[in-house]
Amino acid sequence: MSGPTLEKKQESIFGMKKKLIFTISEKNRIINNIINAMLSREHFLVVGHKNPDEDCISSMVAFALLVRKFNKDVRICLGSTIHEHFQYLLNICKYNSIHYMKTCDLGESPLDTIIVCDTPKPSMVETDTDIILLLNSPDVLKIEFDHHIGTDSEYIGDEGYCMVTEASSTSELIGYLAFKLRNQKDLLKKYQITDLFSRNLILAILTGIIGESQKGKLLKSKREKRYYSIFSNIFNTLLVKETTKPTNFSNMEEIYRELQRSSTKEETCFNYIMEKKRFSSSIGYVILTQDDVERLRVEWDSDTIVSVSRSAANILAEESGRFSLVVYYDDPGISDLIQFRMRRSRQYKSFDLRNVLDLFSIQNGGGHEGAIGFRIPKKDIDNLQAYVCHLIEGIEKAIV
Image 1 (cartoon, rainbow, N blue to C red):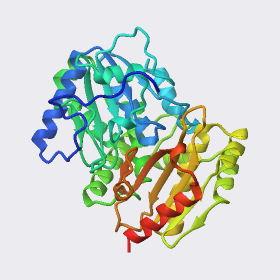
Image 2: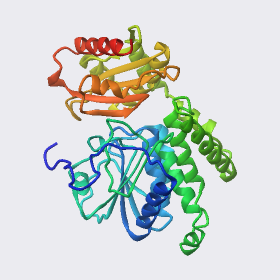
Image 3: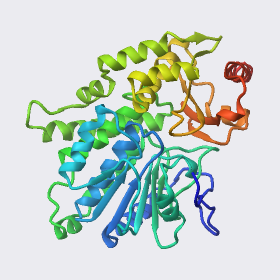
Image 4: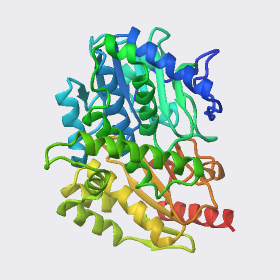
């Protein structure tokens, strides 16, 4: 993309490595700053990472719902066609006057605040020229919510406005903000908010919490597991209480089944991908050549291929017992990149996948210890099969 690029700000935490928030007082200070911004500012734009997943979309929708309760103007930039499984989240936006865009062209729309959700570092933000200008502008407040902590992560928000710390999901952090808001009774009374924890807010947060962690299966630390249990049970109880129509989702089991459901066409796409699977000692992997991807695109759009590739990576990780790797070419109409996705089996805890990025000096990538994604230009790889073999050999040596 031509035009401006994200610049490192002087005397700012932008681009600095993310770290845990160690004290309750610091966490409360940041939350109070964000609440004050929600009250004092008027025009909000919520963005996330490229190819947004369950947690990214859910956290964006959940924050937008909270802002709307204070009668603020809020828009969401999704940046791509969203999988049909998330249509209920888009319906929530529609019924709450939250405008969502598939492209981030803002035109002449006023904007004073941008919120970045679930995005490890600036290079992974779903951007276009308008978004880049906003992130570089000193006149626009940048707020950030994220649970990705590690050497490959970098701050995007302004100092004092980054709710960035260990959690089961970014949606959990939005839930934490909601609980802090609930305690401010005078504030809620002033704005005549009687349903802060509306069914839609509960549904959005719960979707992100259970989708990101696969119902807690991908969590490692005791803290993550403890807070996942606390938050998922609280929101599950709230959802049951707020559900009256039998046709609506009434508990997190029903939500999880919806997230895992595949259409017949997707199942065919999935089977095509899984027929390509191979195994090394520790890695279940699939390489989709350019011919493979061209065949898939005859019947399925790029978003379906990306979604099914994620599912394949999850299953291959469990089949291998350690890791998965799924490799495919981007649609040439979108980019000239080759995509690499890795997942770690929930049974294997001895290796942080972010080490792969350091091991091969990969700059354009990120994730967390159990899942990473990275991208390499086609022109930089002469033989994809040979390059993947090189990756696998290096990873196998690193875990010995």
